[in-house]
Length: 300
Image (cartoon, rainbow, N blue to C red; front, side, top):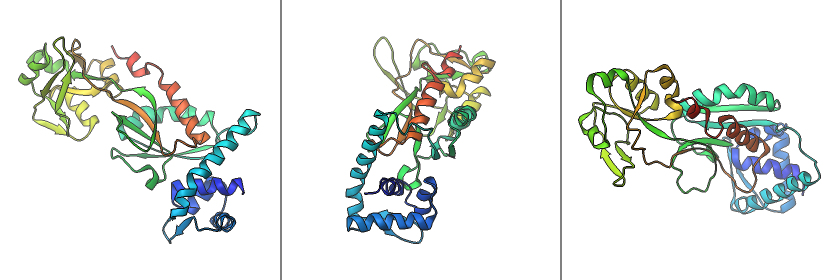
């Protein structure tokens, strides 16, 4: 069984596109199609359904995929044991990321990342929607949340502590809340679907229903509205650290931290085979952000 044919099949299972999978391995569409045909002929079964737009795995293909991944993982492990195959990751790495985080914290790091891995190309999709990795042919998704149970594999690359923010202008006009319950007397800038704020207090968790005359669907808009004196909001430290450095925002209710298990995760489709380019991305950015991340070190 040809290892290169297996590599192509595994990439085809992720991209659902023969041309795309072939190009990552330096193959023309015709050669890639021929390789899949040879793999099917050798096994005596059809592994993929082909249409003019994309391909999908047959039932036999679905059953064969985990075994193909195991074979490739074993080959990589065997080569690694004797120092073979340790070349720089290559090919195209497809990443989807929330728009604001990607703009603020991925883009500034890409220059040195690509300098470190010159044989890699990076395709970035900026979207605040949760995109399907397999359907979209993505290698990695950056997710910022409390991670739910999933068939995907996740590696934490940084924490995501959140704080209550307000502008000095707002404080001068309306005063500072000293307890979470006092937020009932203040205007809050709300993110869609996040008006329940839970705080740790000496008497236990306290949940308040935040109210305000501004509701947005963007973390950037919430931060900017808060910096412009329109109310009090909850923001991730990675989103507001520049506003804190400039004095446009300050933290309130420091004695009552928010209850949250949110973190910044790198998520990828398969636990059986972590491609070298995926490992390179995760390792690089986990180190780049640091522990704690630089945006926490800079936050006063």
